[in-house]
Figure 1: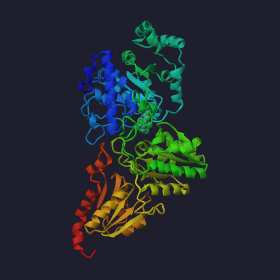
Figure 2: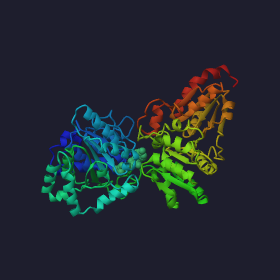
Figure 3: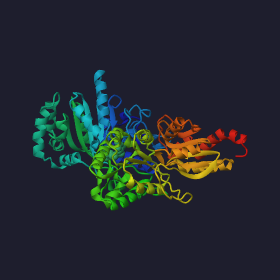
Figure 4: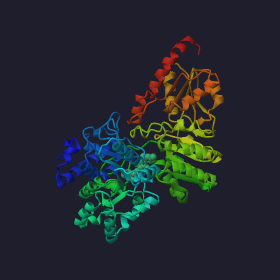
Length: 626
Ligand SMILES: Cc1ncc(C[n+]2csc(CCOP(=O)(O)OP(=O)(O)O)c2C)c(N)n1
């Protein structure tokens, strides 16, 4: 059967083993071809081809409910649920999302993007089912990486005593994005390697006979199949102690074995975990060899695996790590913390230079922040690098554990602003609303890589908590505007202009310069100010420039962002408020290239210039001397 003819999971129910193997090959080919053009999460999807096929054959997802943790591994599910023909549009503006989307398909039951939410969501769905007298199954697919997140434990603890039917598939590929970390990861390794056949058999017998409803028949069934029993191990450890029945570990690329185990677990009258072993990148040699590189990849050449386009400037994370290495060479108290993203944040370079001073805590942003607070209270100087979107989780830790105690922790918020193709769950557009209201924080946003270097250097003097936000796309403006010095709380006037003033921050500084150039052609002299300290505001400069029309520009939601902070100050001082605050509206922005999204939001320089012209032209005409 051709993959393109699969309109729904019903179409794969009667296929032979050979046909299913062939279909798995077509799925892998489609994944590699599409992601090589569109970018996306390749290695994780290649690893769940057989698992997803098995899930859609054993369960009827028209009734049963499937929740993917993170959701980056839902491409195979999308291909099997009627989205093959739209799959070419993966991650493009208006096209198929890289994550589950309820608006896309009734088969996408719950939206994800951030890690460790699936067991909680699935438990909620199971309770909703029970209270409404329904009978369908609820399944959560969770990676071993996601299982390092604290929310999973809260959910397991709750579910283990909830007396409800819930199936957790633990997709264990020994990797988060980087190799997985932590004690539970070691426990999973133990489960993988240490269970011998003899002890297994005993435990299976005693374990399964105690299981209500299906225990005895289940044991009898298994007893018939010795070879099957060899791969089914009931462990008395972690999951069992939480009240879950544990199956596994089983080979996640053996579809028939998966289907057999899923059929058994389906009838379990309580919470159960199936521990499935998969290989990240399975079936594409480049991704098997470099699963971390192909976790989330930009478009690439299939033959070589090389990216199709190189970025013109080094990433902000790379610059940050270079500077941090210099600081750490001078100060032994400097340490760095990552929440499972050493490569994405650039901290892998810090770890290479200072292996004992990089702490990867797993996908555990709340813990990362409070742990860093403890490090600071203990006399160290921690630098915590987290993507802005994942930092959302750690609001209370920032307020309660860091800021209230004025602890000198430096937060490096990468991917602030629009991230592009990963879409709504990943845009870093709420961090200013999260940090600007917090007393005692210094909040910074560099205009380019040179200014980030200066800011990093300054952090060695900072006595309290500091937040530096920077985007996925880096800039270098040094040629036109040399990076001379950075003084916190002092904004940089890049271009003078008496007709109006563009107050821009971070990535928007570069756009503001282009707006300035467009306005100049229209005879308007716009001052451009690089507002690189967002807290505290440069009140002196603001007072001085409040005599002309002001326009703020930021890559952040307008509510609670830079524009509102400026507005609040000006209103409090009884000065004139900004004419237009350019930023993101009160809506979740979907996926697409950054350029396409900026255009959609009216934030391209010519669009902003036109709106400014519409405001200024009448007054300019009235004052021809200016
Ligand atoms: C809260 C949060 N932090 C970080 C991430 C970034 N992230 C996406 S996938 C991933 C690794 C997930 O590993 P695992 O659950 O084992 O899935 P795999 O890709 O290995 O199948 C990480 C760290 C995220 N999505 N959410």
